[in-house]
Length: 213
Image (cartoon, rainbow, N blue to C red):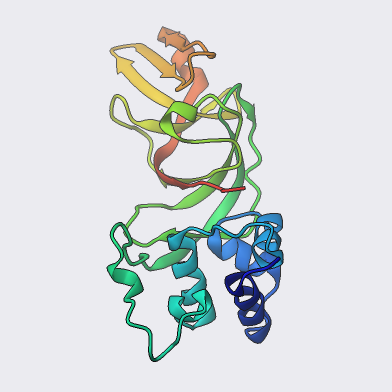
């Protein structure tokens, strides 16, 4: 059975003439997850998600939760651990990047993603694979990329190898470059001397958005 929260999410979405996909994109979740929010399949929705939904709909978190709009004594933002969501800006999504074996580059414009305005980001890419899970980057996550030709040792970078792209930590020692996964199931790759001509750093990963199913 749907809770009042689930019911009011759908009510507010329809009132604002938004589709499930439009709201899901703003939240950084899948459309199917948004549908489960409304249907009541998912009842335990995170505080951050409720806050962002209220911003999208132009109502208060208290209203979505079913609390008395005027009479409630609860200050939602005073709950420990809750922080106001940052303002966001739209950045172009330019295809996919591998978190595993390199994949062919698909630098095709694929819409926009909302990125916190305090994070340096020129474009976003969708991650594929599980080689960066120990950095908390999972398959389907949206990674923020600041375009730059070099990175510092230990930083995570989007790199191109023979026309294919991947996301890894980078370590440079003279004419030796190591790309390091964040999953022990994958081995690091080392490039030396002329092999470095195969590699181009696209940019530095500055953050990411994870999906919650």
